[in-house]
Amino acid sequence: MHVELLAPGLFAAAPPPRMPALELLAARGRAAHQEPRSLEGWLAEAFGVGQRPLPAGALTALASGQPPDEAFWMRADPMHLEVGPQGGSIAPAASLNIGREEAEQLVTSLNAHFDEEYFWFAARGDAWCVRARTELAVAADAPLQESVDPAGLLPQGASVSRAHGLITEVQMLLHGHPVNQAREQRGVATLNSVWLWGAGCLPRSARSPWQSVTTHHAVATGLATLAGVPHHALPSGGAASWLEQAPRDGRHLCILDAAGGTAALEASWFAPLLAALRAERVGMITLCVPDAGCRWETTRGDLRRFWRRARPLRAGT
Figure 1 (spheres, helix red, strand yellow):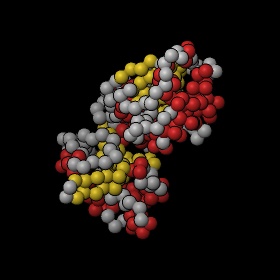
Figure 2 (cartoon, helix red, strand yellow; figure 1 turned 180 degrees about the vertical axis):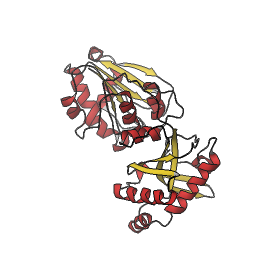
Figure 3 (cartoon, one colour; figure 1 turned 135 degrees about the horizontal axis):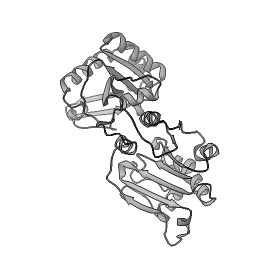
Figure 4 (tube, helix red, strand yellow; figure 1 turned 120 degrees about the vertical axis):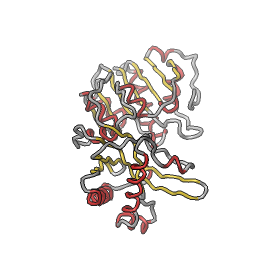
C-alpha cells in the first residue's frame, strides 16, 4: 500500500519542534522540492480541475449534502476583522471556536435579510457558503492568518464593487447581532465580517489517482465526491485506527491537520506509519507540505540507508 500524507502548515512554527519519526523518513527517503502553493492549488492540480480559482464554495456545498446544481457559489467564511490607522488584521474562522448553533443563527438572519438574492449555508461552524443569484466574480484565496494591508482584507476581481457592497451589508447585519452580543459578554472575539473566496460553479468532473481520501477538509471531500472516490473523516485514533480499516494495497491520500500541533502528528501519524513501513504493512510513504514546497518518498528498502542521519526539518529542506 502507498500512503500519501498531505500536511499543509506543518512547518508554520519557527523553528518547528523535533519529529524523530518524520525526520528519519525524510533522511532515508528521496526529497523533491516543488513550487510552494496553497492547499487549494495543490488539490486542483491533483484532481485535474483547471478552473481558477478552485470553486471551493460549490465543492464545500457538495461535500455537505447541499446540492450545488449549476449555481454560482462562494465560500463566505466568518472572521473577526479589525482595521486601524496602521493597517488591519483578521482572526480567521478556524481560530474563533464557532459553535454550530451560533453559525446556524447567523446564517438564518443572513437569509432572512437577503431573501433570494443570496442563500447562506453553514457547512460547519467555521465554513460557510453563499449561493448568488447572479455571478459575482471574486478573486481571493483562502483566509490568511493575518494581514497588515487594509486593501488585502477585501476581495478583488471583476465584481469588486458588488463584493465590497455585499461585505459591508453583512458587517452591518452582524454588528449587534445577539450571537455577537453573547460572544462579547463571554469575552471572545465577535464574528463581524466574512471572507469571500473560492467563487465559481461546480466543476463538471474531477479525477483521482487515489483509491480513498481521508480528510476533514471540506474542499478535498467535495473533490473526492465529484471524482467518485470513497472518502472518510480523519479518525481520532490517528494512523493506527486508519490502518485497521484500510485495504492492504492501493494508493491512499490522508490530509493531516497541523492545527493540533506537530507533536500530535508525530505521535498519531508519523511514528505509527514508520512502524507500519518497517513491518511491511505499508510499502511506501509520501509526505507533501505544499505551502513549503517540500516532498519526500520513502520505501521500506530506503530505511536501510543507515548512513543518512536524521536532522531537524524546516521549510525548504
